[in-house]
Amino acid sequence: MMLYIALQLVLLVIGISIVTRVWRASALDGVLCLIVPFYVLLPMVKHWKDPDFDIRWHVLLLFVCAGAVVWAQFHWAHQVLGDSAHTMTKEERAQALAEAIVGQAGSDDDDEGDLDDEQARLARYQERVEFGRKAHPPAGTVPAGKPSAPVSHEPDTPVNAAAVTEQKPMTPRQALAAAVYRRGAVERATLGFSIDLPGNFHALTAGDIRRIELSRNQTPDAREIAWAMHESMALDAPGAWFVRVRWLSDGWVSAAGSLDGWRLLQQAQRAPASAHLAGSGGDLIGYAIAPAFSGSVADWVEERLPAGANASVLDCHALRLGRAGVLEFSVIGAPAGSQVLCDLSVRLLARSTRFDSGADYSPAAIDARRAPYSLAELISAAR
Amino acid sequence: MSAPIILLTLTLFAAPDGADDEARIEQLLHPAPVAPAPAKTAPAKTSKRAPPPPVDPAAALVGHQVRVRTVDRGMYAGTLQAADAAAITLRIELPKQPLNYTLPRSGITELEDVEPRTPTPSEARSTEPRP
Image 1 (cartoon, chains in turn yellow, orange):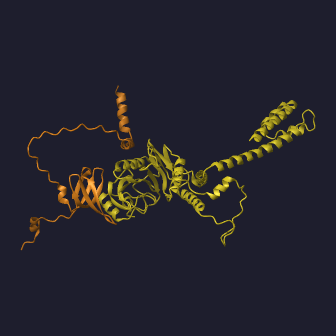
Image 2 (image 1 turned 180 degrees about the vertical axis):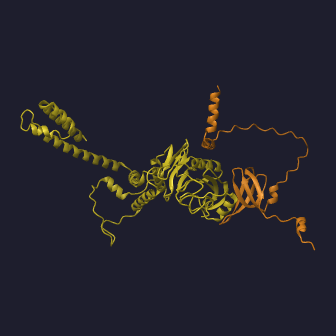
Image 3 (image 1 turned 120 degrees about the horizontal axis):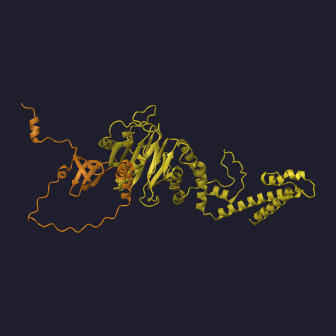
């Protein structure tokens, strides 16, 4: 560090002496030396061996010192990175690594790219994490039939060594701490909608969700695009709930006919848990709030008994129909008795969704791809 | 003078539906502390004899297949197992095992019998073919 500063000072002195000498010969050359890179070479040639204005030794010294400064800068940077890698805990190194991977794999989670891109990015991320989890064979043993890996020419810095030995996802706490909560709106320009978050709500977008799910050893849901929650709700607090926002890209959904709650209940109790909507699984006890449909939004609350559970839980759903698919808002596993709050939250978010013109729902599917299920079938998990 | 009133009225009517929902969410998340209710004084006895307790119509439906609607727009269906002043118990046949599910009476708005009604003796007689 000291060497670097000293070299910078020497460079400054040399620079001033060059400009002073050139200025004495020609003020214009002096100014141009200050402004134009490498212009100094011109006065050097012009006044070659001129005892009053010769600057060839100055220029030589200038280039030597510049080279030394560059070297000192690299040396210093390596030293700083090495020190920080040594002082980082295992978890911090893993976090830095995971952040780097997610940064490549898709930290740009909200606006750009559609779900296919996001699924591909997620697959790449999972592959890398899985790769990190696999035990490496002992040194020198290469599986038969597989070509040996090309030799890396990267410098073997401590950071790189940590990356190789400790590729693993973050702890849930780290993943939550690293999450960025967004306010205002959650936009998906490629899908043509935007969700205006209510004043006291904030949201996490896909990249943060993936990290949290992986840190909890949960399988990431490729259809999830955001988690929205009230600002007073801490995700790691017991009993915390949040709204999962999912995009069902199966196409236009028919909402023809009225929703007969009793019939839906009967069908849903016979059907296995929904394959399309997020849910707690298990068996449907009844509707804590029966399905209703109004203004392109359907909402209902299921009371379910998850497999092996002693107490029932609530799954709250609101669906905002769009032209090319359905935007699902679901609270999963809410405590029994909280149906009003839960339903209000999902319904509010569903109603706060704005589709672009042409992407909004229309009762008649004009040139739109049709989903293989109707609204009633989606609610009752009949298909 | 009337301009502020008109503006206020317009603002109230133009307020989006979401504003109400947001306010209710806040209310449910952060309920205001309830002031303790004043102690009730015992009602003066007007007669020596208490009136007979009203007959609970739900008691007649025990063993029947019923549908229950709740105050929150809820729907439950099952066989009525028990009914008292405080709660009713439904036996709901789930795919894996039957479940006895209790609902508080205060939360029920409608209890509907869906059992196919057996005709009364007089009805049965009237429908019998005459010789």
